[in-house]
Structures are given as C-alpha cells and as structure tokens.
Amino acid sequence: MAPDDLTAWEALHSTPARRYLAPDPIPEPVLWEILDAAIRGPSGGNRQQWGWVVVTDRRTKDRVAEWYRANWQAAYGRHREEILNAPPDAGGLSPRGFLGAEHLAQHIQEAPVWVFPVLRHAADADSPRVGASIYGAVQQLCLAARVRGIGTSLTTLYGGHEDELRALLGLPEDALTMALIPMGYPARGAWAQPRRRPVEEVVHWNRWGETRPREEKR
Ligand SMILES: Cc1cc2nc3c(=O)[nH]c(=O)nc-3n(C[C@H](O)[C@H](O)[C@H](O)COP(=O)(O)O)c2cc1C
Image (cartoon, rainbow, N blue to C red; front, side, top):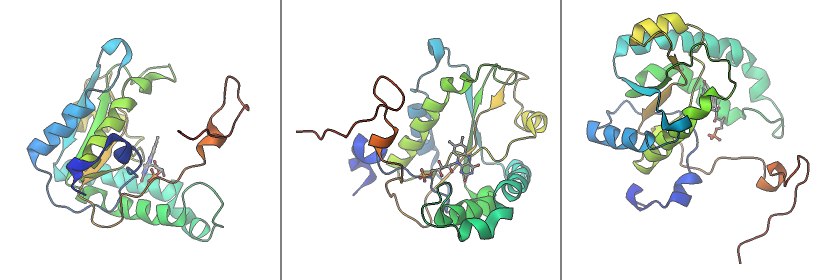
C-alpha cells in the first residue's frame, strides 16, 4: 500500500515505536509537512507555547546520545538478562521491545532527524498536567510521519541534563524539552499494530472498575 493510501484508522492501528532507523536523510519538504500536521494539535487556550527544535547536527546528537545511553544502561541495560528471559506474560518491555530499545540506545545519533518538542513555562511547572499542552501534537507528529513511511519513537531517556541541554539548543530559561523523537525511514521491523491490553479491560464506564464487553458495530 502506498503510504498516501492510508486511512486514519489504518495509521492509528499501525504506528508502533520504530527503533531501527536508516541514516537516509528525510527530504525537507516532507519534514515541513509532518511538522505542519503536528502543530495542528491541541494546547490549553490554544496558547501554543511551544517550539519544535529539529536537530540534524551530529555534535549535538553525540552529546545527548551519551546521556541517553547512560540512562538506558541504568534503567534497562543492566537488567538485560532478566528482561530477555522473562516469561511471555510478564508485562513491561517484551524481549523484542528490549532489543529494539537497546538498538536505539546504541544508534540514536544515527537517526537523520531528531525533534525536540519544547514547551515554554514548563521548566518550573508544578501542574502534573503541563504535558497535556503538547503531547497531543507530538502524537500527531508520529502519525503524520507514519503516513509518509517515516518511523518515530517517543523517548525521554536523554533526561537529567536540563541546563546543559537548554544551552546546547539555545532554549529560553523557562522552556523544557518534553521528549526527543528520533525520526527516520525504517531499516527493519514492520508497521505492526501496537500490542496493548484489551480495550474492554481498560475502559471504565462512569466509575472505575465498571467494565463491560465490547459491543461490535452492526
Ligand atoms: C513517557 C514515555 C517515555 C518513553 N521513553 C522511551 C525511551 O526513552 N526510549 C524508548 O526507546 N522508548 C521510549 N518510550 C516508548 C515506549 O517504550 C513505547 O511507547 C512502548 O513500549 C509501546 O511501544 P509500541 O507502541 O511499539 O507498542 C517512551 C514512551 C513514553 C510514553
């Protein structure tokens, strides 16, 4: 299927994290198209207190990739054997997910384009909902990229070096990067439907705990 032929439903059901990315460049007009779709996403009061920093500079990537790998190692890498040998129903990152994430940790700097969605006034925000004003748009970025055959994953493992990152990207003092999205044409893997707990199990009607069987469309 040509990517242009995707319906919204098809895109919604076939946008997993793509972590094996080829270094081939993404044409700039395609990137603009994707970013223009992202910024159609919602923000509180339509204030759009955001900026989208596109990074192609290898030196910036190499520096951030060091932090990413250190955090990866501390959070997941050191549990490699446990995760790879976990029973299939253990939950969390599957062995396959682990290997993909490990690959990304080792190669993240090779993704041709990185996008940092940046939110103003988020650096010292105390509302736990501050991200609500950008993550909808971030998902639009991922979906628009998918329609153009470009893989993405939402990552946060680069975190913990906020002042240096702010300086590296020239961000305003009050701004915070809300994620790092490495983008590129997939080198392996598939546009498979993301595996999730069944919808009937996670949907609650009126009150938490009140679940019901799914009614199929007639
Ligand atoms: C808040 C958040 C942080 C994440 N951070 C990372 C990350 O640092 N590295 C990574 O490879 N994936 C990261 N992910 C991606 C998740 O691992 C991924 O969404 C999940 O495993 C489901 O993957 P799937 O959509 O391919 O099924 C993050 C996702 C979210 C929502």
